[in-house]
Image (cartoon, rainbow, N blue to C red; front, side, top):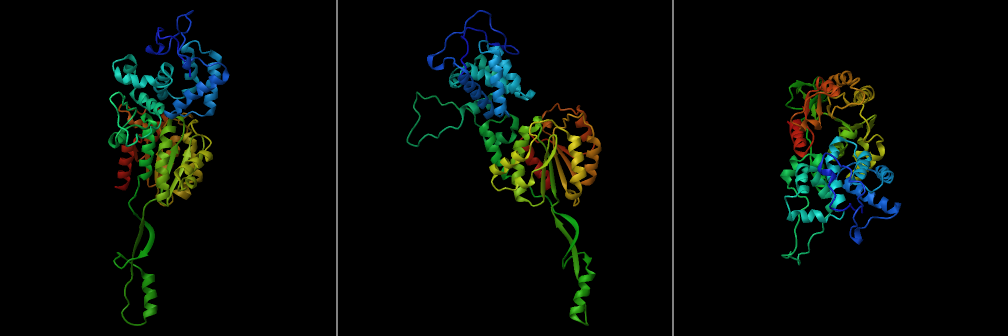
Length: 422
């Protein structure tokens, strides 16, 4: 583990960011069991441990990010905390909303890598660290859940003694979980939310189609069926045959953005879409970032883990840029005729942030709206009360959608399902 300098040094994280320590002051020696590691192997182990902590807290980090972090720390050295902070920040943080999570995780890991300070902080609730954790409460909750890991249940024969300290790292009931943002959930909360997402069902109301079916109480006369009956029955009274239009739920087409700004929401929504695809036969799911990929066949697998693993292998542009206009153009040109011919409902899941400067979005969104029964835009940015359509892509999409809804927590998804069913 990385051991901090002496406690008499000022904490760089008290200001806007880490500051340099006074020059010439040697680092104090920590306990023998927590001494500074020697060699590149120990450095790799320490940085990998910190990267695993961030990954359990929800940051999308892979093996490549861990290797980049090791090279960055080797380049700046480990004598000054500020150098290590900004070196890791440069290679591990990829979005503005990850800064609070990284700052909280780094603060916890630097002060006490073994997590003992989290338990001791329960005895001193008015400390500077607790005050900063209050300001970054969502990030602190996710870091605490990642550091705690799965807890083993207490045997029935054991009972807590008076000397034991019962510290609850992260806990929430069902009602709080429904309203919590996917971006702020701990690892345990995300797992519980995934189970609830897979249990959600969507029953779209049946719509009349152009096909007919025999119906004794139908409002239209079936002349062909009446003629066939008359040929079989011969002379006499000919019973009039009636018919009515067939009714079935409309097709559902989902276009989901998997760019870097949408990755966490997309991963959660895939659990909902996997359950939806397995329960209904007319659902099509396509993911887009810089290209368009059909993943419906992979999501039909009954095992959710295997289904999502196949999706991960099929999609090559996770966490990349977003080309909304180009992706909609490909869909309108290659897929719209096949998927939207029966009055489908289209769910467009994206935040509207486009790397091409909204080029082609308005034209393709207008064409998509004309081709489907209803175009619903699901935007996680609507969770902010002060959200304003300032981005060019957002403005272009707003003019050509039938409805705009937030999609950032379980409650928003439940309201979406209720609206579609109604």
